[in-house]
Length: 230
Image 1 (cartoon, rainbow, N blue to C red):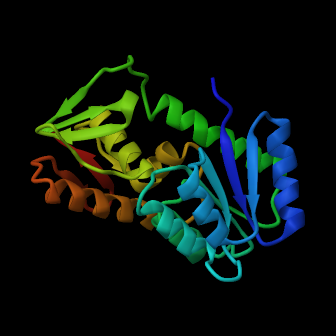
Image 2: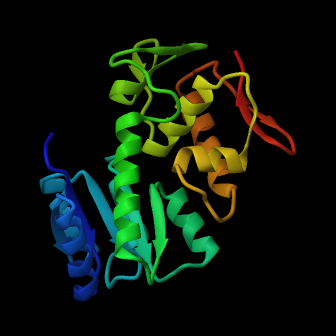
Image 3: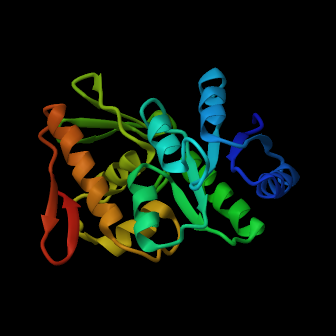
């Protein structure tokens, strides 16, 4: 299996080197950047397997970098920031990051988060499926092995988290899940914060399914959560 390449973007050299040293010890290849502009240029020149992004940087901040990356790629993103307020975590997740960890942080915990994100991508969400298996629901076809969603042969472009949520709900169709249960299932660890991150994912998924003309509906169970029925 090829070595994973991780970009570390932080304007503090000691933080960059600390993160790099721990990741290299775990067998990852690491490239470091001191600002968002150089990281974005580097990503377009040669895509990484993951980005670890600081928020407060001169010039292009982490939120802007995350937004630009998400225009063209679903690469996993972990935000590491001194801005630990709940609203900042929610904004980071809504912009498409896969995880958010506040400074000061344990480098060992960050390594665990990195491995968890990569493991989730490899194994997908929920029960395991055989390679190349397709899952059909309404007029939608999901191919977990390729992390692809199609309607009538036309692919629907989803972010990593949108795909994870749709796959989980489709695999567990006709069952209702609370927002907390969905957060824990999608992020693969106990999430402490506002459940609006799930509401935002559902809103974006509904729009993309609707724009594609799909008949698949994500139903809101008021006062409880969400489900997909067939």
